[in-house]
Length: 327
View (tube, rainbow, N blue to C red):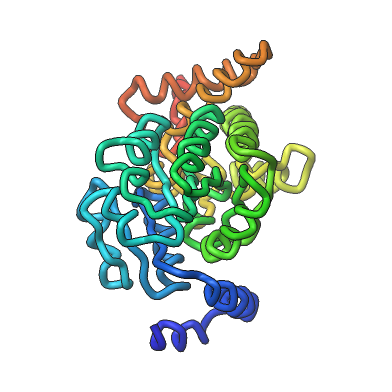
């Protein structure tokens, strides 16, 4: 741990200041921290957790993903229940769907079967608000705490520890979890009671899914009509059409934006199928309150088409591939 702390002297000053405050908060902890779900996002988040803490208990159904973190200080657990046996202070989950989240928490080998009283569960998956509320109630009934804390910032934000966490739950519990979340991000926004973090995340991804479609169409239109894609991107990003999809995550390969999936054949990043899942969750939530979402419906059609073509594991910006090539 001392070696890891000393190596942090190469970090920028603002990261050192954040780390210092984190370690002061950690002095009040009693027990280990666990992390379950080591996909593109989870592996990066867990890596930053290990950088800050020196060690953590990890689990993923993909043993290769778990073992990859061992040299960084991780201790691999055989099941979610084993994570809960070993990590009594807090457990973070980052999983792809509501059904998997429920299995990890409530299944025969789930964390709630073995968790000690007082354990704080932090679910950073994107799921429906109703499931988050049920898990909060189940956790409370077993003497544990639960915070729904989905994230914004994508894989780049996860790698750089610049994520924003949208937290739902009791304000005091969110405050207790905050220093752990700030080991993986820069902002923790308390959105309200249990489920409110998920509501905020679905609203955010609703915008993201729609704006990505708009940026794809605009880039295709401009380049088809003869404008250099790099110049077009500069115009958009200095004008009222600017968005995260255009200035940080541009889907057009010819823009050649460093580090984004469009420069590597849309590999890595945030999968199309996950964006489609989030839009469907948003639509389900809208149906529950009798709200129409016509733009979300149109966006779903784009991601559904990409998935039908067998490209659902490509990054969601891969909808740029959909328009027919010029004659």
